[in-house]
Length: 217
Ligand SMILES: [Zn+2]
Image (tube, rainbow, N blue to C red; front, side):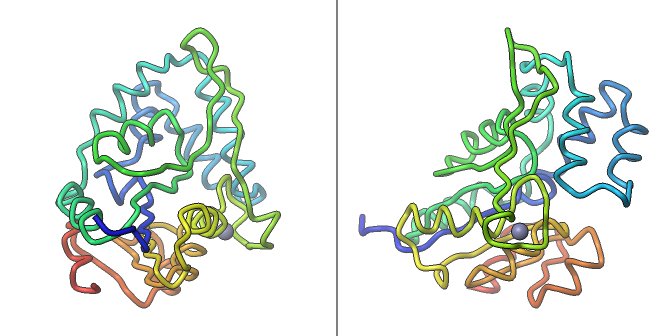
């Protein structure tokens, strides 16, 4: 096969999978109210919320996180679209503000080339509550200030795979995806969950079907 010259980066929760890991974990461990109040706390920056939420996961077994991510169905036509991208010269990957434990499972299911996510510290198979966040916005002055600047990591992987930024595609569903969607050669809001991403997106898919990406190709 010829050399790949393009790259597509997907958000994970709500984009490649039909749900959100943190919501499944919250229900399972009855921490929904705490998680929601942290998520809605206006005085905290995005990455600070991620640090506090990680503390709430202390004591959970890694295998239970794997089981939870496994229980969330893959998005309609995710496999088909990933296959299409791979056959058409694209590197494929996940850039998510979820956890590497989960992103690895989804990346393996779909046969993706890379994933970038927060790393929960694990000791003897148990989550300790410590988290290491990729960040990146402190290097490119991105206003996102979340646990993983998706724009920074889109550029990072494009560089790594020797892909020009104009040959990248970014797809996501929340405000945390805006910086990569606006930076990519083609940015698509998929089933957008908040008004901010709708305001910042030219291309919007409103059906839960990744096959609709084809309309933009
Ligand atoms: Zn950013």
